[in-house]
Length: 111
Length: 117
Image (cartoon, rainbow over all chains, first blue to last red; front, side, top):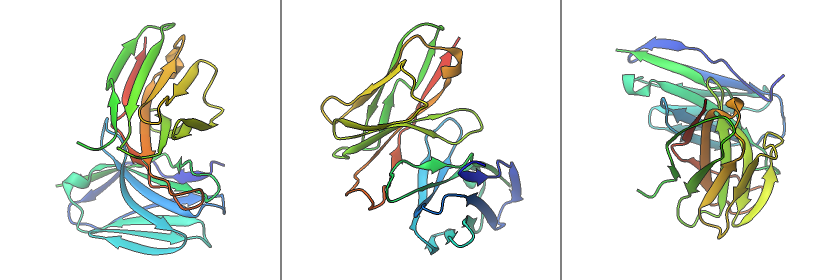
């Protein structure tokens, strides 16, 4: 079992829909949780950064962390075609600052 | 542009040749990371520097790979005797880590895409 599991998709949804992306993980030491967006042939761009459990909202994006279930989610409201990209979940521990990434989920927003 | 920059953006080489990539981090970021990403996978950690000190190397980093950050600013990643399996996107990231255990927000560059023929 990999440390971070993420469904690679692709996930196709109509414009304006709410998108739900998620990851599970096995290492209970993870405390920092991130979501990156990556457009084709570009570097990852940091979207959300959360510490420990709870929710964080930024515009149309909401990140949730449930440490008891080892499950994190990213919700995108009012999805736009420009949101079409690969979304990578990532996490790290306080002891070890390197980031462990999921495989990424390819998202297509259909106009 | 004050983000992380990487050069070259693309590199095509023949098997057995040596290649070198450069990363310029965000100004005054003391940490610099190298990752490798293959198609359909997330980035995988290779190594990182705090200032000029190389603090950790992944077991993915074979003896043919070497990284330097001589003055604590830009970094280079060299691959000697390239193999077809080295074909990947090589990503650099930087952060201004306030100290271990305080979380680390890493900002990525656009990557260098390496193709080994």
